[in-house]
Amino acid sequence: MARIPLEELRARVEYLLKRIPRLYRVDWLREAPYTARISFHRDVSAEVERALREMGARIVEERPVAPPMRVLVVDFSEATPPPVMIGPELERYLLWSKFSAALMAAGADPEVYRDRFEEALRATEGRPLEEKQKVIEELARGIVEALRAPPKIPLALERYEEELKRYAVKVAREVGLTPARARSLVERLWEDIRRALKEAKVRTPDEAREIIRRLVEPEARALLPPPAPPTEALRQIVREEVREALREAALPGAMPPVTTERLLDPATGLRYIAPTREAVAILRVVIPLPEEYFRAPPWKQVKMGWGTLWRMIGTVLEYRERYLNPMALALMPWLPKWLEEMKRELEENERIYPPEMLTRWPELEEAYNKLVREAIEVAKSVWMRITGEPPPSEASVYYTYVLQKIEDEIARLAFMLARREISQEEAEQEVRAMAERVAEVEAREVYERRKEAERRLGRGS
Image (cartoon, rainbow, N blue to C red; front, side, top):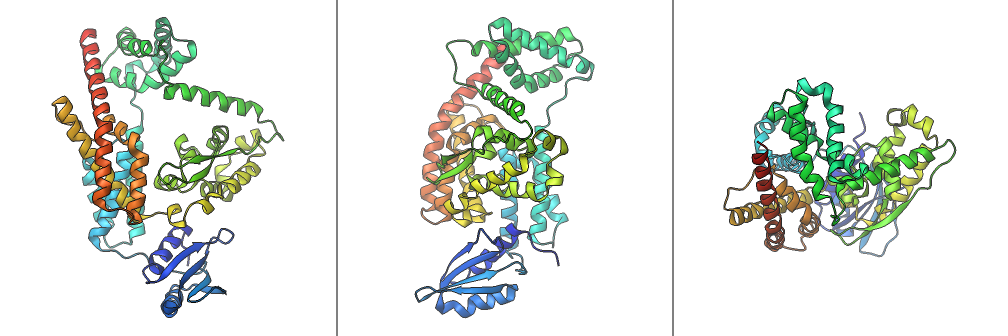
């Protein structure tokens, strides 16, 4: 029989054991990933040992501790704990929560895709939860990838695309931007420009240039002195320059240092270890994930759906033929050794965070999704109060801006709810107050930008 994947095995074991009263902790050992140290009251010894036997686990040793506690070291490498069995309503709720959270994170409205969710659920009826979850995750991933696909430029203008890009840069430079800032601005706006060209059904380069000038000029003027705060486009320029410098320095035998730093996790108050921005540039050569993943707190990396960074690096090293292509190794022959050292540095986070925060935690996901939903409802009511108009679709960037500002506080409250340190009512009250404050500012800004864009397009037409 094939071995159960490590994360799934741990989740099943913890679910079954933690249902036993007076079982205190299940701590997985770093040096032996399939081995756990289990602490419990001796009065439930028979129940614990029976559960371990039924799973097929092997007791390796008993650690000496003061009574009435007992501590067993147990090997689960050959264990086959049964899948977590939950009622159909809770199962549907968990799957929908996961599906909707993935789509909301991409700025989409989950309700638009409910029919596809229901269809996938019907197709997997009677199958284990793990299989259903994989199907739902694949469905959500496919929808998100389709949403993120950039719009194509009209067919008649495809061959002019590079020329039109150069024209957009020229417009930005005429306004007064430096060449680097002009290029970064055009890169940031290009998907919007493509969409505008498609919607306007332009057929000639001259028509396209008129629309490009109307879109680029006001954005370029907004970047002129007095200097605005650094935009994401400017940060991207810096990152690209750092990445280019690293590539130039990556000579055979010249391994760059493995650099990490301690960052504060605002949701938990813990200080965790993360790669520096220079190290992230190297990691993204072999792990092409969004930059925010690499420096996020470990629990957030799990929430993003990719697991912790050190486990991701472990997968790359285990299957290096698949992930480390010959071209990368020819340029950076030191890469495997560098990754191993980075993995060792990051594994220190296993000591910093409790084990339940480094695996899938259904109670946390449920609490987080409920608080996000509460914040969105508050943002809708604020929008109607300030603008006098119906709230925008939940795919609107307005909700993204609101949630980004209070994301860490929502996570902090979700952790407290999952640990039962605060009531649902208290958590929702805090979220409502935060969302109200932030939404008032964002609603005005988004509404004003929308009206200004409508005025500009009206003048242009």
